[in-house]
Amino acid sequence: MENLQLIATCPMGLESIVSYELKQLGYEDQMTENGRVTFRASLSDIPRTNLWLRTADRVLVKMGEFQATTFEALFEQTKALPWPTWVPAHAEFPVQGRSQKSQLSSVPACQSIVKKAIVEKMKEAYRTDWFEETGPLYAIEVSLHKDVATLTLDTTGPSLHKRGYRKLVTEAPIKETMAAALVYISRWKPEWPLYDPFCGSGTIAIEAAMIGWNVAPGLRRSFPSEHWPIIPEEDWDTARNEAYDAVNDDIPLQIGGSDIDASAIDIAIQSAKSAGFSKEISFKALPVHQASPHGHGGIIITNPPYGERISEQREVESLIQELGKLHRRMQDWSTFAISPTKTFERHFGQEANKRRKLYNGRIECQYYQYFNFPKKKKSDHS
Image 1 (cartoon, rainbow, N blue to C red):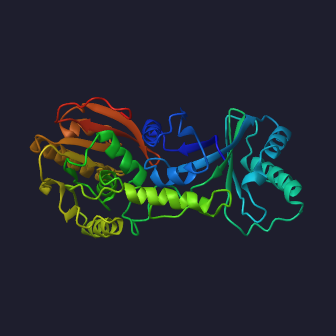
Image 2: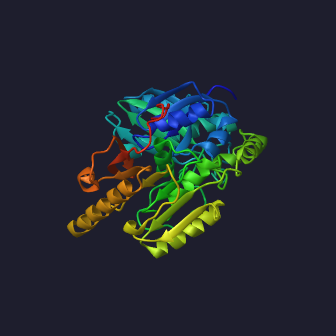
Image 3: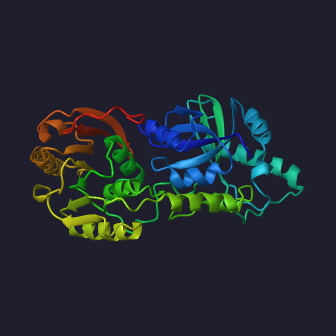
């Protein structure tokens, strides 16, 4: 099946990064909107994009989009879509929904109408009145925005940030997708040293290593669409074989991290081992003022702690001060830090060369960028 419309969803602020990734993979025909990039593709691109996208959350099949201001319009136009082409008679097909600024504001009612419409369509195709839903999962979403309904099938399942290497997590970790985005925005190159002085469970360092060796982030996990009859099994085999062949583990990496929490360091070491980087990434239990990155012309990328209570905020401010001292001590290193702290620059000790608004989960942050190397030519994803 050719000429599909696929949607790569992402957190607000990362759309241009996802667009850049898709262009790097060869998908030029695309449209960027808030929280998503829609692109033209074929069936074989469902395995490929699920395996390769680092900063997207999910890959969805766009089944249809239409104006819907009444339940009748929602029912009839949903029923008109080619559900039996995708969804077999024994499939499990739950329907989720959301509605913003639309006349059809009751999400449970919209979900019910869409489910009923799909069942009626499938009754006609399969000549049966009962569907047991014991087979492969086809998660369907109806999204209404300004009276336009978009119907999608989720090919991914659990979000793409679940790479499979992190068995244990520390409190409030940064998602793998966001960590990869921070590395992309920094324009880090594998031949440069990289260090995270607030590394927690090591996510930023591990994501950088995966980028450095060109390891497809989805190689260690499974997807519900692997069990869809419409996608030939050989498409998945081909995509995985291509990903394995693309790994470049001959590149020496200089990646390290530290954290005052020794238990977090234990988790980071285990996660790096699980990801295949036990020898390439060095983690140590150290407070930030003792951090000592090795090498020249490197990059610090970090997610300092956030303070919710006043006592915690004072501690966070002190840690940001120490980070600023580290930056000035490492005179040929650049520093990139994501933080919701409004007074970050004052405590860091200087104004950032560049800032970028990002959302870490639901927390609005700024990505503060301090350059200590000659500015490179601006790339597509900046």
